[in-house]
Length: 584
Image 1 (cartoon, rainbow, N blue to C red):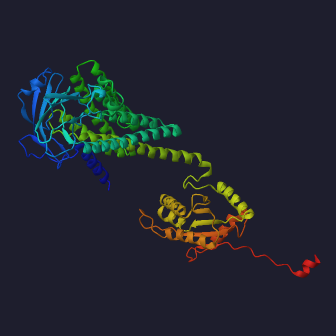
Image 2: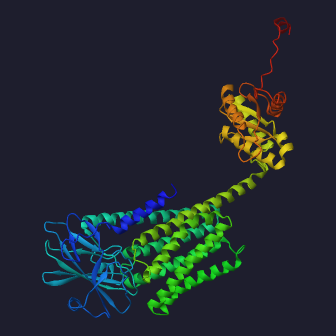
Image 3: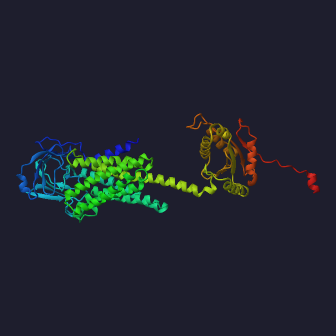
């Protein structure tokens, strides 16, 4: 079961990203010709394509038609830079009788410039997209470049792609019908919306927790969530499509800047959260230097050329992610619940960042759906962090509450003190007298507690006492007060219990649970409960002497009795004679 959810995420990401990857192009025509027919509604270009890497940026379509194209694997990372252009030629044919409208998309949100040239009525018709163009000039506005295809049925046709980018990157080409493409875009939007909605919801939750507890870690978690949401939105093209539609220069640089800023902020927050300076002071200082160096690397984009700056930030991202993973591992080794949860999310993040770095260098095959998986793992760190902080906050709140209620609660068991319980008993007595409300007063003792203490020692005796309290809570409701009134004696008020039978049924469960050996203790230890009870609505004993009378009942019960539950009987009244009454 723990591995089911990650498998579903992987399957979803692959289904969204690949979009029919398994559907291979049916090569029924000449080599390198993609046949688009009714049997194939979506495909990713596989095998080989014709490519020409222009050593410059001046060629036009006329020059590309006579250029020396070479057969190149379609999945190879394109060796692009600031001074060259990649031309890709694809031959497609729409099957005769096929009436579907076809589209071509390149699922790379951080592509600088791409133009699709399509031959229509003897002229090459261009469609342009990419970060360096305003979304208003895109053929189809969206998260990444997409184009409509105007194909004549039964006639092979060449498609020319002109691609420019400042650094190498894989260029997946997906062709699908308009209907299938709409479904893919809908699934993508819903998936991204759920991820960002979850992150933003947890941001609000962290702010609410900060407003209630004033814990700076919750405020840091809110800022961390905002940074993650912003970086992931940019990484998936959401901000380019919605916010900086008319700022193509910033949209292009934001792809490189925002993830670095998010990583630097995450390292600073992690350093505050983990508090490694206690056990690992040298690593803590190194982590601080790495965090500030990550943030400072952003200024390299205004100091050196774009490829050099991108190389610097890329190395920084890889090293920063590795140090963040190491910090999480060290925090986990110290026994912190934060590290235990975050380690499950940071480990795959580092693996994917490493893969993408080696992929860009041509050392690993291109696998563009990795972007979806990285988005899911990065977003998963937010709920893991909020949950871990919630556990820590709950522990702190529980300690603070116990300290606040220390005057009215027993230090060992957390039950009420005798004085606090006496006030509850007096209130219950008044309600039983005035309103005839059913209330049962029960005094319970652990008969063999002293034997456990003498034979096994005080630590085991205290542990058994705590186990006894847990068993008491199983027969009580949250509204029923309970107190420790002796070393191994407890008083309880059962509200709303109107009969002896109901009281007996609850106490029978308590006695039976005590006879079950306590786990983790050798030799086996059982708890022997005995109880004395009174229904205040039937026998309204004054609170001042009620517990004393129940204690007398317990004192009269043998340790080996078969009736460990006894009730306090009302005191019989004397009947006055008729003659004496008339004389009076």
